[in-house]
Image (cartoon, rainbow, N blue to C red; front, top):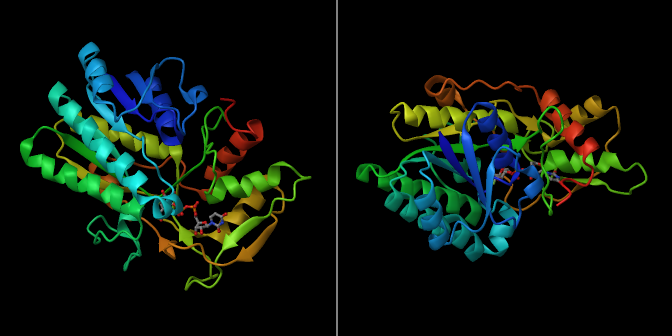
Length: 331
Ligand code: UFG
């Protein structure tokens, strides 16, 4: 089975590619390398450098190979950036994805796995969050993902695209052997930032804890961290589900356990045996106080079960990756 991985040189796409190859799939990565890394594309995979917004390139690719499914990871995903540059987000995450749908439809490619996000829920009024929770994003990033979900929902009656949309909570961790992991030029995520402060003992890097006055037990924000391999596995289960005739659907993807920023710091200290230097600062705009998934639906329908349900083991794999690759990928 041949799978096209759009944005497969990014963090979650590259780990999913690794797992697909391990499970005997054939894969092709399409990535413009604007934020991805060629070094993260496994050797067994074909690679095309290009943009998924280019209909001619897509036509050419779809004419030369019959893909059984498309997995789409090529989104911009920084909340703050989406607020300062909303048009970039709507163009890349929405308009370009419609170009992809058009070309998939013309080529008769039906199966689609979509990377959605917990950001579609905005400030949830009930946690753990179920899929039926109202869609009420509070930033253009969340809106862009919910708009694509709406396009997909509207496409169901045409029967031209069948999809699984996975609403990720907080992706973290790395392959346990430290060979693939998280490398963003502009790192904003908590776990990599915590670990990076520990890597160079002479550096004066200090972690900023954004907000200590939330209505949570220790005042800091609570998130549901999920290992990147468990995310990857869910994509493959979603793919098999569609191949077996499953109906298009949307699933939350988290461990169902929330950890505060302080608890993440404490766990990182236990895993690494080092003290994390941090300072308490103002809230970061746009951060909901608590995001925790109810993932019962994906457990039941796709039989997904996390292999790394513990925060400590998630951080352990991330620590190995960062220790082995303090500067991330070399290209
Ligand atoms: N945090 C800090 N200091 C930092 C970085 C983060 O205190 O230096 C805090 C944040 O304020 C937040 C928590 O750590 O409370 C987690 O922040 P991340 O940036 O790691 O992750 P987010 O929860 O902001 O982002 C995730 C996904 C996004 C998604 C968003 C929805 O990565 O794609 O949830 O809110 F849009």
